[in-house]
Length: 198
Image (cartoon, rainbow, N blue to C red):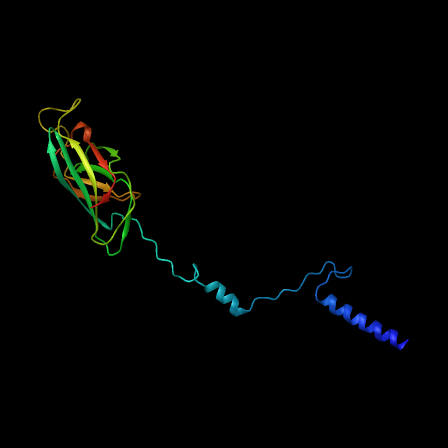
């Protein structure tokens, strides 16, 4: 009898030990394993750990905007009523910036906007580039000085601009560029290429 009780005690002890470890039995079928709460040190570490793990990723280079660019329009060629030039921008900032695409371009004078019809040309087309501080990019310009349609043949064909509001690609704020190249005929039609490194 004593042996049976001892044996039964071992079984009960073993049964109790197994049940405490979370084995599913009819008596504890709805129980779940206990979980340990994170220590305060591990919780703090996870909430203050920097995103990106090691921090080795290089910072993203921002787009060139009107605060980082200075612009000018330089004539390049003329003939048979056609005029050619370049809209040149320089990164005047202290960090690199990216440029990719076409500029907006609105002729203006002291009275406000002057008729402008900007036409994009794909020679050259858009290409991503990074301008280091002092780096330059250009966009080709082409316009005409021969009146067309209802434009007057005596005097200027359109109001004479004194400047242009040029908006860098994917931006909204313009930079002001002096325009000293006279009126633009055909309703202010200007062909413009995408920016390219220069």
